[in-house]
Image (tube, rainbow, N blue to C red):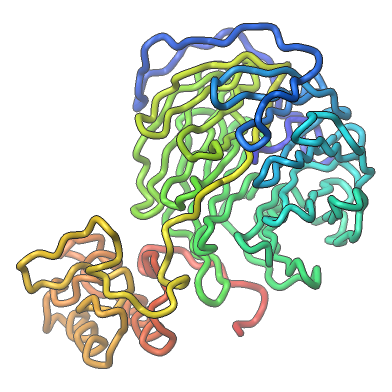
Length: 478
């Protein structure tokens, strides 16, 4: 979800209109001229668009929502909403659409079938971002200036509970776990993430990051979180964080830096393997960074329009939709080729986009499996070889790839650290602790991670602490 482009009391405005940009070609993929949908939007959205395949774009400058037909990638009309709409969310089946209206301190509820606004619900001061419970029963809204989270019963169309974080907390961004058991709330200026239990509304954790988390997204296996910062021009970083078994947040590397002025919206593909970050600029072409969540590497930088803010993946997972706030357009990216295949004209200053779905599940993780699975059979495409060298493990300390960490394997790790054994003696640690670099020796944090996996089981699919900065929770380990 993108940050609001309206002006909250805690910061200066973020929208600045600028001259036509000079595109930068450094480090980007240059596509041929693109088809552009330039048809004028109808005043009222048509109800003929299938709710399950529609996408919705918030137009902050025209107080409206554009409906996108994602089958044909054209605009199907607009829906009038409240003042200064900022963010939008859609239930998985597309039946309900929720829009935050920052200027009117309200939330608009749109029926996905008819595209009519069926309710406008008053919430706290300056509602900014919104997420929906996976079962479509609730909406959670960050009320920035009043320091609250409004919990909305979507069936009753009313606020059922308010989580008071305190006015100084500045709740800005929000994400929800796959089962809807917890919400993650990012603050505007304090570089904190708050975690709340959605059954009790109690705070269960508070942890810090190295950046202000103005946009956050949680991977569906709940083991990784992305955060980006974009409150003022010049804040152009985003970060990849692992959520370990204790709930601590572990930044896997130094924050990424967009090559443009600021980092905006952020999303994770439903398969859990790829992240997309809008890197914006007011005075030249922006881009979308494509991140491999397994290696943490940037695998693509896709040119889009000026000041890209919102990013969303289509219900079928094949396309990415990006709002270009200063061009009044939406770029459509083909995920298979990482190229823009269409540009759609929408309303004034589009800031956020959302789509129904996803309609498929991510690749199962070790924590979702009923029993440990040998690494050699973890993917359907993996073919056994005649080599007797075990495949690199996805669990630190699991040297033989058997799905567990034994005492003998811990001894091997210690011997590597002492220089009595080569790093290749434990292929799993060669992959995750040392990134395959034989010149890097075993470090203590790798041995600790291996010992934890020995006692508690192999549930980690991510690199260990040796490549990370740890931000400890303010709550005790349980």
